[in-house]
Every structure is written in C-alpha cells, then in structure tokens.
Length: 433
Image (cartoon, rainbow, N blue to C red; front, top):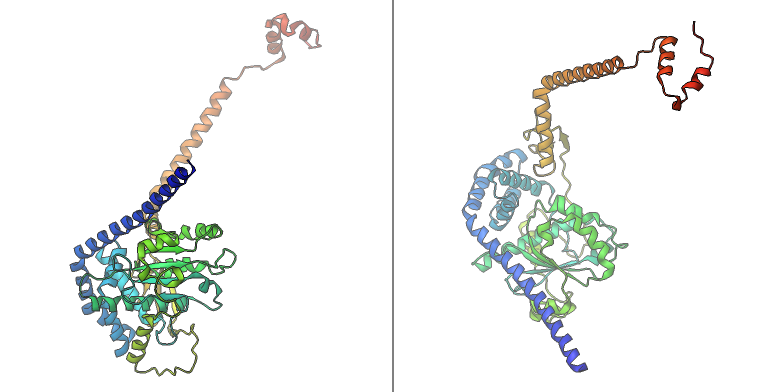
C-alpha cells in the first residue's frame, strides 16, 4: 500500500511538472505566432516609414544638427534596421504619426546621447550566448546576473545603454545572416542568485529602464525566465512587478532547473544552469564582435588595448537643454511638455504624448473658452441659493407662536391640563393687572 501511495505521488508530480512546461510552451508559441503575423501584416507600412525617415527626416536632421559623415552613416544604419522600426511602430499601436514622431525623437537621442560602443567592453553581468544556442522558437538567449548589477559602485545607466545597443546590433547581424523570417526578440535568463532586498540599492534602475531606456529600445525581450528564485526574493519581486505592464507580467516565468532544461534543452544552456555548454566565463560572447567592428568603423578614435578605460565614460553633449511650457508659442507640440536645445529642434520632454497632459490641455482650453459663461452661471446659482435660504428663514419665522405679552402667556398656561403643572404655574407670582 505504501508503494502504491508513493507511486501516485510520483505520477502526480510528473503530471504537474509536464503541465507547467507545456503551459510555458503554449504561451510562448501563441505569442510568437501572433507577433510574426502582426509583423507580416504591417511590413509594408514599416518600409514606408523607413522611406519617409531616410528621404525626409534624416536630411533635415543633418542640416539642423550639423552631422558629419560618420554620424550620418550610423543614423542610416539604424534606419535600415527593419525590426527596430517595427518594434517602435508596434509600441505606438501602429499609428503612423506617433511612430514617426517617436522615431525622430529616438534618432536625435541616438546622435546626441547614446554612449560610444568602443570605449569599454560589455559589462560582466550581461552575457549573450553564442549562435545556435537558442530557445525552441529560434530566439537567442541573453543571461543577466542581477548580483553583478547590485554590487557595481558606478553609474550603470550608460553601461546598460551600451549593452542594449550591442544586443540590437547582434540581432541585426543575425537577421542578415539568417535570410528567412527575422528574429525580433531575445529570451532572457535573469539570475537573481545572491540578491536580496537589502542589497539592491539600485532598485530605481528598473523604473529608469521602463521610462527612459525602453522607449528607445522597445520590445526586445519575448520572455524572462527568473532563475534561483526563493522566498527571500518575494519582496524584491513585489516591488518590481509594480513597474511592469500586465502584458509583460504574463511572460515572466519562475522555472525550476528541470523545467528550464525541459524548455531550452541541455545543449543550449551553460553548465551554470545545468546545461552541457561550458561555463559563462568560458563561453564566447558575440557582443564583443560588434565592439571591434564599431572601433574599426570609427575613423577618429584610436584605442590602445593595454590602456584601461573607465566603463562609465560617456560622450557629453555640448548643447544645453531647457524645458518649454506646454502652451508656449515656441512649442511645436502644443499642450505637451517639451525641451529645446541649441543644437536641435524641440522634442517631447517625456519622449511621448501622455494622456494626462492631453486631459490637462483640454481642461485648460475648455476653461478659456467658457470661462465667462461658467462664472456668470456660478454667480446666478449663488444668488438663487441665497434667495431660497432667505425665503425659508422668513417662512419659519412666520409660523412661530405669537406671544407678545404676559396676558397671552397667561392664557396659554390656563389652557394647559393640570397634569402638566398648570396649577403650579398659577401659583407662581405672575403679575396680572
């Protein structure tokens, strides 16, 4: 009987394990099919956007920003990245005007604020697995070790921007060599081993990534597999999930090591996570190849490999930026906060048109248009309420009992029955003339 009981428990465990792995595969399969269908349906619109950007927007930016040949070449290279343009188009719900505005803003941002790729190697806490080490849906795998981020003392924002750009370049290189349906996204393995809520002093980085970085690199992750998750990380997850949209939360998974191997297979994972590949330190990182190509294309930069370079060194912009009032005549985005600089045309302050700004603008315009009518209506309502209150007070006074003299009060007392003390009141010394 005991063996039968343990056998049933083992069968139940296997069924539950198989169902979880099957659920992950089904969710990601539906997501891949839907994304590929959307890409094929909007491919012509994306190419039309690319032509508009290359023929109209880029030449005007070359004149406004006084771009040299190298900066113009990099801008053209980014505009030719069809999956990147598609991801921005999808982020703005396939609205052409909003997508063009966002792409123009991103293009200006890349020219002025994107850190150079050849000043430092990729960060040690982000690893891209070699080619053909993909998930079942032919997407490359990137490993992020969160403990390395929490232990880093310097500013991580330029480091994250540089590595995200390297991931984009790697994706573009894979699409050029593949030749078939493009690879649109990565699959991330988020290793949180050694991370606790008290040790994460840079939790605000997640909010910065969602508000500042992702608008320029939208939709690059198809799914996130959180590894080495324990009960001690529940507080960290409760803080992080508040900044993520609901669609992203549906593609965050917490697999065990066996479930991870069941989904990816051992031939696609390093030994650090139970796979057959060498450890992460010994695996070649394809991101390093794009750094060498960027250094070779940069004609004005000479790098000595023996000289250490600070990973936080970023090219500073010489132009000064100032905020413009949403209702200023200099603001081309009337009603939305914008920034103006000496080197470029005004851009949106938050990188997009927010609904709260639209509501505030409509409310202001409504008040400006109907201010006199609303003021007059409010004054008339106040007068009406005042008259109504005064009439009610007068009516209440009119119905008060008319007692004007001591004789009237005596008549009232005499009419009262003896039970309420009329005799007693009569005995009180009330003078009657």
